[in-house]
Length: 301
Image (cartoon, rainbow, N blue to C red):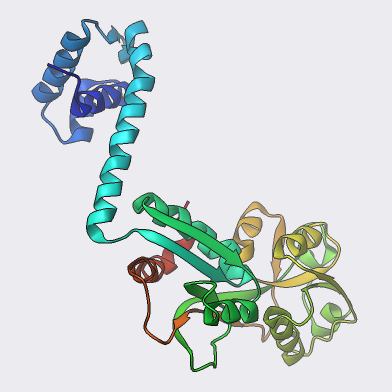
C-alpha cells in the first residue's frame, strides 16, 4: 500500500482540528473512517504521527517531519485538479485587460487573483491607463477586453454597464475641516489635489465641484490616485475621489469623508469590447466572472 492524497488530507485535517471527531466533521466522513485512514498512513510510514495531550492530538516529531511534504503534495494535487477543470471548461489561454486607473487599481487588481486561482491555465495581463487610451488600445487590438469610467461613443466598441460607485469629498483626519460644517465657500478656499490634466476623471471632478458652487482657488496636480490619497492624508488640502479607491483609508481613519448639502454623485464603470463579435472563450469567461463578482469586490482577496 502506498501513501494516498486522501490519507494526507486526513492527516492534515487532524493536525488542524486537534481531534479525530472534529476532523471527521470537517471532512464529512465518519469517525471510524478517519481513524482508519490515519492508521493506514501510519502503517505505510511505519511511524506514529501524533501524541495525545490533555487538549487533543498534537504532532510528534515524525508528524512534524511529514507535514511539509503533505502540504506540498496536497497543493500539487489541488493545482492539478484546477488545471484539468479549467481545460475541460475551456477556460484557458491569454487575456490582456485594459482598465482606467480606478477600475484597474481598485477593482480589477482584486478580481484577477481570484480568477487565476480558479482558472490557473490562463495567462493574464492588466494594463492601466486613462479611459481614452484604453479605448484606443481596444480598437487597435492591444487589449482584448477593457473597463472604463465613460461610456464609449465609437460604433466599433460594444459596451455594457458594469459597476456603480459614489464620489466622495475627503480630507485627512488631522485636517481642521474634519470637524467643521461644510459650505461651498469654505471648500472653495481649500487646496485641492486633482488628477493630471486632460483626463476624464479630472474633467468630471471639476464639473461636479462647479455644479455645487465649489470653485477651487488653488490646486495641486498629481498623476496617481495613490499620491493624491497620501497627500490628502497629511491633513493639508482636500480631494474628490471614488469610494472604491479610499474604502480602506476611510476604514482606518486616515481619511475622513466630508458631508455637503447637495453632494450626491455616482460614477458608472463600463465593460467594453470590440463590436465585431470576435471574443475569445477566456474573454467571455472573464466578462461573466467580472459581472458575477461586481457586488463583492471589497470582500475579495
